[in-house]
Image 1 (cartoon, rainbow, N blue to C red):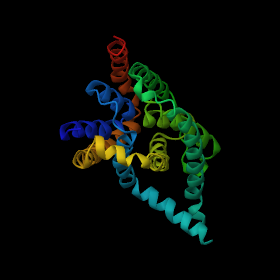
Image 2 (cartoon, one colour):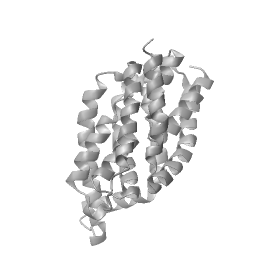
Image 3 (cartoon, rainbow, N blue to C red):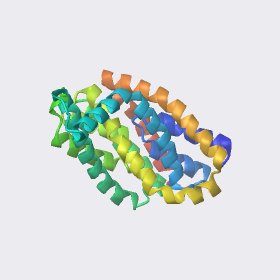
Length: 266
């Protein structure tokens, strides 16, 4: 892999990990166009780790609040104000378990090597975003519970399918379960933290193949590029979430999906 290609992958990952257009789908199509379908999955996961750092930095106050509440709970010194954060913590755990189970089943299908299917999933994502426009949730973390855990956990698991936007379907699921816009956006990224870490651990054995097909310098360049672009992308996305305009990405996803289905069906 050349440095220029690594930069391209980094830009794609950084921009599309947060915007509701499916980073895995765009990476899969980019590899198909560049005829690099033999790049190890770990490369994708490492690019996801770059954007994971952006998530932790972007929501550092919420992450710190959850960790403080958990530490006080373990020490049996939890206070009443820790209640919402402890509730949020167990909801994240349940959602992660559901994501892991569904994601494990889907990952084994190796759908990223089917560009026509990936293109069709872009259209599915567009329909999900349009449907989310009609959600009217207003609840916050004080009443979050099993419903959000199950709905968002299953949705994020489905987001493993390339072409299905993990952020888009998770935010839409949060809205459908009753969460307010900003909370649905934040929660969607909080539950992505353990999911991405888990994917990294499961792919760790591919490090040998990664060094042979990618190389150290392109890997570092792609990682840094994904992190920088991801930071700008996350800030932009949260503004769109607050304004309720995620559905606008449907105008990009539908033509992209149709084009991909036609192009790769030749």
